[in-house]
Amino acid sequence: MSNVIIQYTIKSEYVEENITLLHDFFTELEEVCPSGLAYKAYHFEDSNNFIHIVNSETDASAFAHLPSYRSYRDTLHQRIEGNPTMLSIKEVGSYSSGN
Image (cartoon, rainbow, N blue to C red; front, side, top):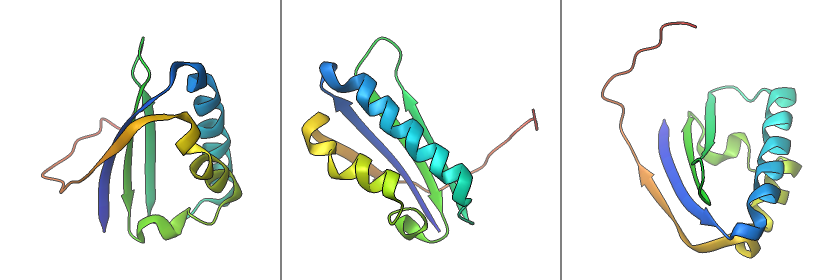
């Protein structure tokens, strides 16, 4: 199992495009429903910063082939400022109220 947090900053003129591409990606994930994958992306309010939290039993192979992900990833170099930070994490515990 792979648990990763990715943090990055988008150039201000590309924030809305980045959000649109992520929406397209999540729409395709909903259609394809890859098993063993939990993927969340957040946009920090009032900033150009994004964070993704990915929990996958199969690493990126669960989604790397999707056209929407390829479109997002293949154009990221145009939108991003600096280099993304990627951290592998290990879950210590979790809680969800089920809501």
